[in-house]
Length: 58
Image (cartoon, rainbow, N blue to C red; front, side):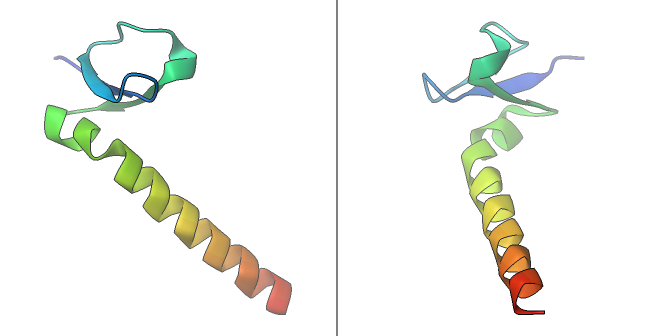
């Protein structure tokens, strides 16, 4: 089964890993999931930042 990766340098989805690991986010099961990689990263970062703020307030 193919895996899809998001390349942070080219901003393109790769089927199977074509580039170096430092440039890739993934793997994802579908091209559509890989296309949303940066949005998912932003969402997770926002959640982590919010949790960090909560921990500092406690």
